[in-house]
Image (cartoon, rainbow, N blue to C red; front, side, top):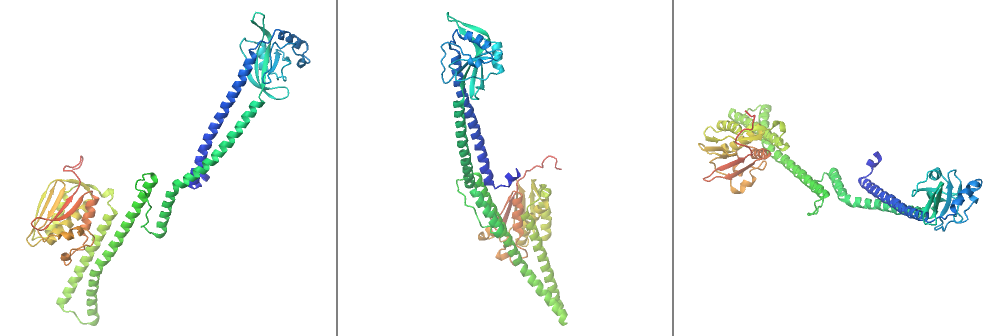
Length: 489
């Protein structure tokens, strides 16, 4: 079994096909051989039965006494008349007594070896009863034997049963055995050719059937060796077998991996670009402060205070950017089941509203919230809502109004700011994308990307549109229910 499992798959399939065909051929051959044997033996039995039903003649009765009187050489005693019996197909004919003596008819080609079953039938004869068996003659030739009670014909057409004697008929099996042996040889040759052909056909079928698997294996090895995720396996559009589905799954997997790698590389590049500006500015300011200390030329107090404020602002911007990158990376990795729970959406919205009111105390923020329970990670969901409200606060004019409404599982946040140009709407959820008008404002360009990824992981959708009368309206739709599930406080 270990050796079989270590073979290549195509070799195992070929062996299994050959074994299945060999079993089928062997079963058919053995069945065919036994059927032919039964037919041939049936013909021999019919011939012997036909011979036994012929009249044996009245003089056969006197043969028994002569056999008994010459037991020393019973084979030499023959009846003067066989009662009209004529040997057909070299039929043996002899009479056996209870003591094992026998008399052979002159038409018999030889003498049959006597067994206990023959003498038992002579001792206990039953009219119409006979036994068939395989035996041999005195020369060792195989014969088919029929032993029946000895009867003689009467002049009136009746028969008389002779006690203590039985008649034995036999036909040679040489021709039958020769035919069966030839049949066995033919079946063996044909079966062997069939098994070899089945093995070759199984190997060919295995190679043809596993050719797509070989292509898939080569593709996987190529990806593992070169890390080239652009490779694809050609698949016929109308094909829907297992190999086609496996190939499509592989193509889908490599496409997803390639997209993920591209996004990762893009994230690294964008993050490096975004980090370069604050780091450069921070480095310049620190170098100015350091050079002032080294040269002994103090910076004016107002300029020094401005430099320190700039350093603090840049450090804050760096910390915010790094925090956004960490949040986005956690969103890309997906949420874990132990952090997901049923949340009343009003709770994270109210928490976000408190933070928004602190950041925009001059704004009027209204809220109309209805119950809506969703399955989400509470902290991530609150962060996404905070980002939406931060954008509304950032772009709202002084003394403006921000309207927040939660109804039927849809959260809408509407501001009355300048709004987003139509040509920029498709890019608002891209990482590090910032409107030209907003690049002077603080921010990393990752806030809405975090919102989109968090909402998608909750099974919802988010979109930004221009509001009638000016401003922007953000809509978040999350699947859930207006009532809490059973057991939830």
